[in-house]
Structures are given as C-alpha cells and as structure tokens.
Amino acid sequence: YDNTAVVMYKCRQWSFEFYGPDEIIRTDSLEHLVTNAKQPLPMILFTTEKELDELSKNFKTLKILERFQNYPVSQLSIGFLNKNTREKEVENYVLLSCR
Image 1 (spheres, rainbow, N blue to C red):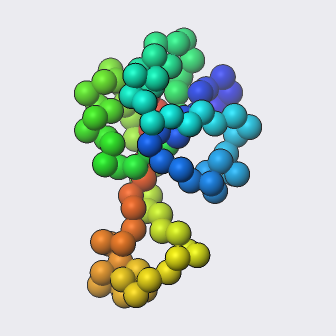
Image 2 (image 1 turned 30 degrees about the vertical axis):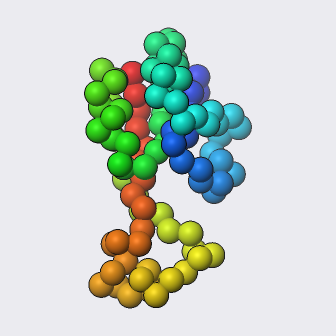
C-alpha cells in the first residue's frame, strides 16, 4: 500500500493506529474525505459499518477489503461474555478501498 492515504473516518481505534502505517489521517468530515478522494493517490478507509450507506453515496468506487468485529477487551461486560447476546455488544468495522 505504498503511496496510499490511510484514513480513519468517524472512529478512534488506537490499536489500528499502533499497528498501522506511519501516517494515519483522522477525520469526522465527509467533505474532507471527498476532497482527499479527488487526489491521485488511492485511499484506504477504516470506519464503522454504519457509515457504509453515507460513503457509498459519495464515492464512485468503494470496495470492502475486510469486515470484522471489535470490542474493547478492557471493558468486558456480561452481554459480551454471553454468546447469545454478544452480537449486540460488538461494533462492526470495515476496511475499504475508495476512489
């Protein structure tokens, strides 16, 4: 992913920043994302799954690279530990390629 902008959109995941590339852009602004997408560099976007509808309306090409769930393990709850209610407790994230 050389010469690729990596952006976290409307989320804060410190582990993604720690294990990610040197420079990760953080923004909560759709306008900022759309402006970045007009640059010649491709963009990798990390965000919550609930942002997909909004993003798909504003990008010509939006490819899901990976879907995964996240739960802060330092804040375990009964709802998370119970396998029958775990789905309600986790937040779904996506890694996207945008143009």
